[in-house]
Image (cartoon, rainbow over the protein chains, first blue to last red):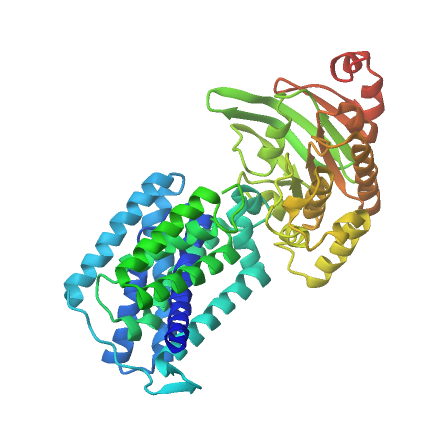
Length: 287
Length: 237
């Protein structure tokens, strides 16, 4: 029993890491550009396929494939900002609708290229770590470790670099940031590019565990939504707390009750949090 | 006296509404000028035009003889920094992060450090609260932070929009003294935009009175303070 609990907790933390990677990119795009990016999940899917192409077709080592995925994703994000979102800069609703269209285009393009069947991703490492009674597959430990390192690196970038500070300032007041010399024409593509890269890397990182198909983007997008709502819009510590909480609840409920019960509990939690704390767990009153 | 900031025939429309009609004035180098007038006279519009936040229909703005392009950030490159109306700090960033945002385009690390020391010298309370979120400061402290942020850009011309707005009178007097110190100590040109004409004119070497989008009067601060017309219209005497 205690073995099962420990196992579920580890799985929950891995899920939480994934959700947090998705949520940060999603909330960054919203904060910087005021766009609710419905295509965010598709970038997760694209990241998974890019990693698959890198490892399976080109025979690259996984870390290199992941790094290339991140680099391509930043470029893709910047391109999408330029072509899809820039024309709707002053128009949030149209931007949101454009992102829905983009999501469909990306998903169906993947469907045409790769077909609807799930593709298997080769296991990166095999074997397990044993900690007393606890057995942790090395592939899971690796995913968790890399995910946490990427999140920490992103946190340091956001909190302790000049550009990260400018991004946070931009989220609060674009006009004042601009009069102090922050260049929106650079920060918009950068903000979206980084968010897209986080989603794509999450996709690549999770591909060996969860498989790859054109339809895998929908769930992470939904979870990113939930994390952002639960944590409080714009609050990174809130998002971290919500992501881990969500991962743990899902994992524990599916282990001890059932997978469909996990969804019920998750949404019940969202309803309760919204009733008691409409601004989210650590959110502040203003958006 | 050479003028640092020069406004010529500035005309600005908001849609069909004309906000400024051919406004012209000069701010002499190293001095404090006060732009006063009642609510809606167009004071903030003048500052927005200088900073490229609204595009003038006509007129020129020059800083040190160079024309300012109507784009955000253009005035900053010529050495103009604005402390905006209502302070508009980045509320979730810390006090020190707000100050560093002012120095966003200052690449010289030592210059940034030195100016930060200076700002903390003028406003010791900011140093005490430097790790606190700017949104948690009192109104007066937020104003100090907003002025400090503008100073961090190492400007030659400092634009202050309504620094006394919503702030306790005793803090307004303190701010006034510090603005004077800043102008003297750093030889900085200051354009002070105020509804509080008493405070602004008593600090200023030059005063400009704006009324419904046009310059109504100019003079030295003391002349304007003594003028019966001004006393009746803006000082309530």
